[in-house]
Length: 270
Image 1: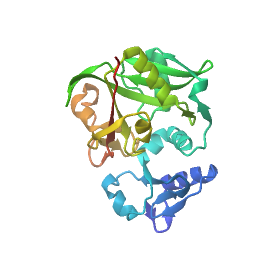
Image 2: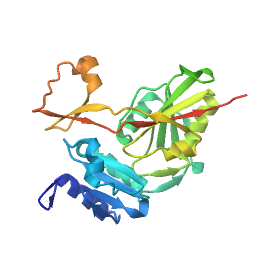
Image 3: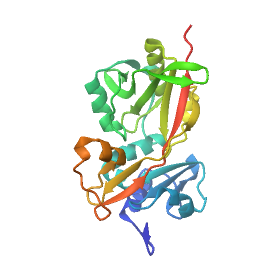
Image 4: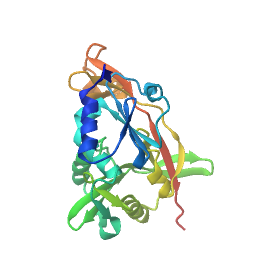
């Protein structure tokens, strides 16, 4: 992270970003403590293991922790900056009650999510857009139903696959309005979703009536040392387009994320 007293370019860029946006912080070891927001931003350099974070920061983090991997900062820095601005109340604010919501085509959902979600687009059955006038300002996508065995029996479960708002825009009530339309139209017995553990503990889901149902195991990636491109371990093993990809310890770094929190909400339509 540091050589002597010199911060890496990665850390300096985060420092400049916070300073330029008048976000007050205190450096605690290698992290940025934002007391006003009860958030600690933890830069994770390429090659540093996620499990080292507690040791790096000596348990000094307060409130929620946001982990920023160096490869994602290089590859998707603008998107991460926008997400931080929205999270810290530095972007524009829009109330969902001023917006309309409707189903959208796959192309529109894909284009929007590739620009505004850190994981991009993923295949989904149902796609909805939130509109302020003619402008689409948020997108939510949901899977087709899957039978799941629960304590009370077999249920038809749907996954909330993606949600993203435009740029640094914070939409008050946006997630709820999109979920409500999906529930009215599809009448699901259950909806499950995942919150990235490196960004939040899923408070938005709890406010929408979801309950926490566990935490997934960390996912492994190989990251090219030159291009910073990520290659999921599972895809390297299973996906044909990755089979000829040559990655070794000289050209790539193996890293693991923090996993996801899983949330479930049960619906009753009588």
